[in-house]
Length: 248
Ligand code: SF4
Image 1: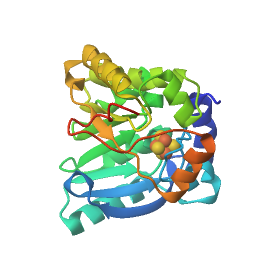
Image 2 (image 1 turned 30 degrees about the horizontal axis):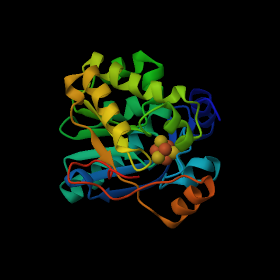
Image 3 (image 1 turned 90 degrees about the vertical axis):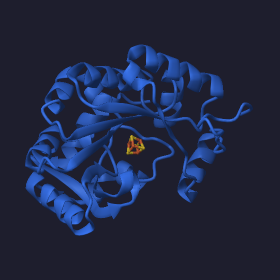
């Protein structure tokens, strides 16, 4: 079990160089109705269901260093070519390179909406991160919760259970700073009652968190093998209300 904050510092030393950050791909994607996407390298968690595991665990071997200007140009180039209004940094964890991310946000024309998909660990750890993000009205943040409580977080990510508290704190810090955000949660490993308990907890934090995005497990072959090796049980069948089945 590792400390996600220490892991973030360790990985940041590999994937950042001054204001540059490593990226392994740029692409148009169909999500959010069409979005230009830059896939960065490096993360502070080790989620067993991660679809970009290779870049997570071997960050030193993948990607190229790009400046904020390079990234802003590539994202806007794809968006203009495809007629998209939205851009994002995805793949691994965008917040690891704070100076880089802020510079990209500064360089993007404001008519593009930037969707920040994050595990929230660093924003939960440092309130000023959320306050700095609040400068950008064209920013929307999606915080992806790994499980429904500390125990599940740790089993799924390999990180210390306190990481789950940081994820929730990220939502608190963002809401307090006035940043548009919402929670998403991976529920494939959770019984229905724990998902419901999390929903109630989030709603008590803020009425804005009443809507929770349900994340579904995508069973790529390598994901299935990792889950099997870890002995983790999961379900992939959802009810019309977006909740896991009654029996799991
Ligand atoms: S937080 Fe995201 S990028 Fe990082 S390991 Fe988990 S799923 Fe992969």
